[in-house]
Image 1: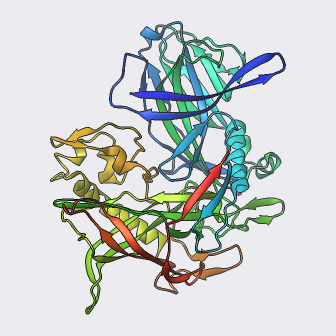
Image 2 (image 1 turned 180 degrees about the horizontal axis):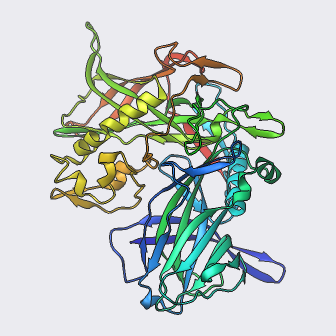
Image 3 (image 1 turned 120 degrees about the vertical axis):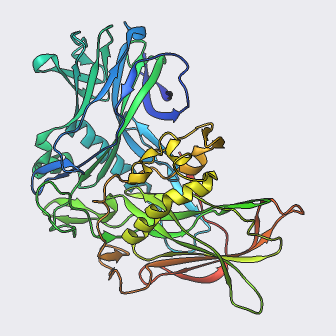
Length: 531
């Protein structure tokens, strides 16, 4: 069951006062406070569309998006089903994102502290990308609602934030920010996102100022006390994540092999630049937990052709690498003591901190006064991502200290699709779920791992690594495209447990394509934003 936290903004306009719903952030909890409509089918929608070939489909080759169902609403008769298609935008880190009903995203003015390279922040680009996404969702994605319970749908055709179009067989097509349908006792609402076919016309997209890019949204279904759009009596019953990939022209950006209609094509140039983010290490008597983060920049110049523009940074890109932990010794070579893969999926046109899933060792790895080195090596984005996925199940088993996936991880709600490398949802605020008679803190583990793709279609193999739109390096020509090194002295209290204090911190970045810097004393990057 879910709870909706509504962020609202009051503002005076003339003599009246309007209450606008600016954003909706969903926090998932373990049980419902009381009965509401039941919501079925929260499966992620993954669509692609190619204006160049005027084709579209889902990642699994279908031209149909299944509907979600809201039913058993008898206790909510007389209230209203509230349906929104919110535009999703990430915050300062990959474990923080919001779902905006209106075009109200404000990135603020941000600056970097302790940066060791010339990476600069571009808040205006982030805002522009969001506005294009919002415009696309309102212009190109409609919501079709059909009743299967025998009760005709009832809704005002002209609502403050929505236009309701009556279709054949009693169906409604909804256009707008938030739409309301009155709940009757027998209603069984089938709710389906529908692509407007005119948006396959590249000229129409150009007229709207929409670029080829990845779009992220949430189809949100709530129950409201009235249809005014200003009521605070609102309860969330279900959400459905939506990702839409608009393929660029093959004349504009390099794409993967064309396998014919029904198969999406993805970009083959990679551009994610990085540096160390904060590192947090906790030790217990017989275990160690290491949480890494990386400051990343998925932002590169646009390319334009005949009035159409796009960029490789308009798309989500994987950022995963091999992590090695060494113990340093005075008179002998560094000792490798642990190795794993970690990272995250980097949102389009985004700069911030990619937080890894974390690593737990069954041993206490750090000693007070010991010197250590962590090396993060990024070689091939597609291969590193595949290695990470293949090891993910085992990593989670170790993290939850569960022996055997059958009795542990496969019984944890939300993780049962891991065997098929399915979606791992972002579960914020989960107070703890029991797995194999142990308390499992899913929030700690899953935050930031939001977009595990259900199919093997994405990502394609990248051909080149690009520092900007004109400087690229063929992938495979070098051993890695970037490598980050962190050295420090560990500080622990007398018990040898608790948070590891890092002193004498030194960092280094090596890259044949991105800006590098030598081993030097340094502090972790911080991002400061004002709104």
